[in-house]
Amino acid sequence: MWTKRLFETIEAKRGELTALTCDLVRFPTVNPPGEAYEPCARFIGDRLAARGFAVTYVRAHGSPGDGDAHPRINVVARREGTRPGPCVHFNGHIDVVEAGHGWSVDPFAGVVRDGRVWGRGTADMKGGLAAAIVAVEAILDCGIEFPGAIEISGTVDEESGGFGGLAHLARHGWFAPGRVDHVIIPEPLDVDRVCLGHRGVWWAEVEVKGRIGHGSMPFLGVNAIRGMADFLALVETELMPKLAARRTRMPCVPDGARHATLNLNSIHGGLAEAVDEGLPAPVVADSCRLVLDRRWLVEEDRDAVRAEVIELLDRMKARTAGLDYSVRDLMGFEPTMTEADAPLVATLDHWIHRVLDRPATHVASPGTYDQKHVARFAPHVACVAYGPGELDLAHQPDEWVSIDDMVASAKIMAATALSLLGVDVGQG
Ligand SMILES: [Zn+2]
Image (cartoon, helix red, strand yellow):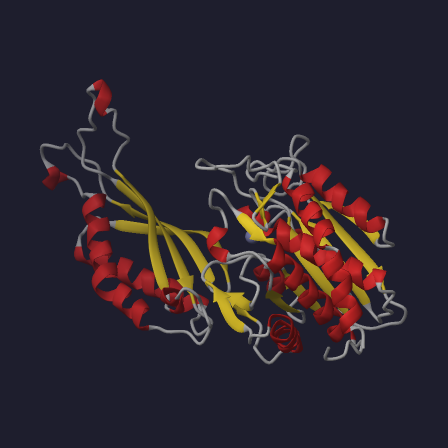
């Protein structure tokens, strides 16, 4: 029956948790290009090594952006329990997006004001990582014996796809069966919400190809821009309504994300213009390229998602002699969702209700985060995102995280970890 002492210990660490968040924010781990990864990883590793964790630094050699100037350094810390058992792993990405404009505080100073820590990465997600670290340290301070193991990792590059970060660890067996059973990623999904997973993504470049000709005699060429317009008309009239009619059982937020969606990211047609120099391109466009971003649902099938775009391109091609097309895949990830009745989710639900005195809500993310890499390489692992930051603040100027929410989430994470490891934490 550890609840009371555990929660009092975490409450007493409020100042320490705030200070740790400030310390992490002061590493300007901006990605791209991947600044200050190594000192930030070593700061986390040194702290946990002092608490008896076995600490390993894993560099993702050859991953995008990795080099001597910006090495992709991840840290993994593992604290063994007193006897064999499962392993609970907390993973936080240490990279942040650039600060951008519109700040009223220094984004990398770690400013504390009005019960909040302000700065780039406070919500997304150094506040969450700090809460997980302090949660685990409180377990150790209380002298609670646990079976199995607790791991904490700080990984890089989540904001650019996670290839040199969690993907690298997962690919190299760090989440293998027997090593890790439950993963909590303290992304900013709000302190009372458990994020079960995310939609899938397919990014592709579509190129419509025509035949060049003189601009004064367009009938002698085949205009790729007109072909693209024909394709886009089919997308608008046929594909978009179909996607809007598909509704998922995934609890995606906001509500619009409960449907399959398609965004047209960019379009480039014809030769590059030099209009300012008085040199417009006097030809029929022989190429038009479109980058699309299709977000798909657990109910959909990867091949079918692609096939329904190809089918419209085939119809475009068939209607105008001389047109052709190609499709190049840029990025693709499956949707993933941990089921709501998994012990990890049920345990988080229980402690959210207990600590906050209100029931937990389940959500799913419209966009992907590092859970995809756990799902790809370690399908036996139950993985969710749960953390203290507010989702709407991520990547915004004047980003902040509530100190009350960090403390509450630390209690919830500590009690959840112990429950999952089989320790009788009590009901408090
Ligand atoms: Zn994040």
